[in-house]
Length: 473
Image 1: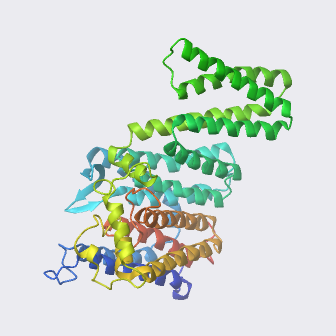
Image 2: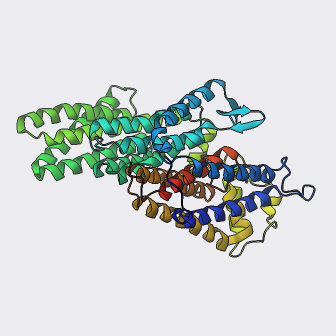
């Protein structure tokens, strides 16, 4: 039987923060789309009229959520996740292609994006799994299961291809770390993230040399004997010298990257013999990490040149400073910076943004909505928006930590992970701190699927929190 809901048990602070974001977001969509010829806020031909319908629809969904038995979210977590996977597969096969990605269903003239709801479904499924009585997150079995639960929807979304939305699923690392993911695994993820960046920044040979240098540092830390390090360096140096001489004398068609790899393989054979003779088994871990890292860099380089489309490669290269293009691929980012910078301290005023009015920034009501805030509301407005988002995130942490139910707490961190990722990456990409990957700003950006998904995600947690005194699943 559903527990009686008391108004005082609902967290109104979170709801107020949500309403502030929704209202301010709608005002900025209005500012982007407003035209003297279209004055009605209910004009469905304009983005602000369409968005208002989605906002009102979401309010109805909120009322329905509070009428639903709170235990339903736990018991139907897996079926909802399974249904989301089916929708993701279906949209790849039968969906409508928009912006070169088959990510949408068009039903009765309304676009529906399953990937937005897949985030909600994944958060529920993770919470259901991790709240099980016999689940130990540090076990390999659990970690593999969790990575598959996150990875399967992400990979299907990447096939569409929608790399930005697929990347959002990496935000669930925050949830997993809070629930006990080993520190070394979190450190490994950070290491791989850094390695990914350096692989894109540097030429392959430079990355390999850096990894070998780190491997020697690892040898030094484990051995603490200078003779082992000197011997290892001498072996590598000797093979490298001989191979370079052979390359020059025999005119072998080997580039620097290939020479270093061959040298490393030959040296490793000798290192393995030394490890066996001197019983230095701990060095095997360093070698495993070294070759695993090299394989990772090769994979990144291969995927960058073979999976990403030219305009996606260009966006990343522009961000990293390897290329400059303010007329074509880099146009959006350049105009976004101009719009934000032109707002100054106080902004130009509501409906007075020239960059906005003249449509200089493409996708300004969706992915680049933040530049509208910067232009019309200035530094003060952007600071207030960021402050409200930070306040919401802090409030979500507080709510999650006060739950008696493991399921509710874990789900709360899932909501936090998704909103935090969208908030931080969307703003970072509009000011040039992250590649333009096309993800919306929660509760702000125009788009019915995203807005409804974020609202449902948040208010399911508020519903679970409202029964925290009795809900102990």
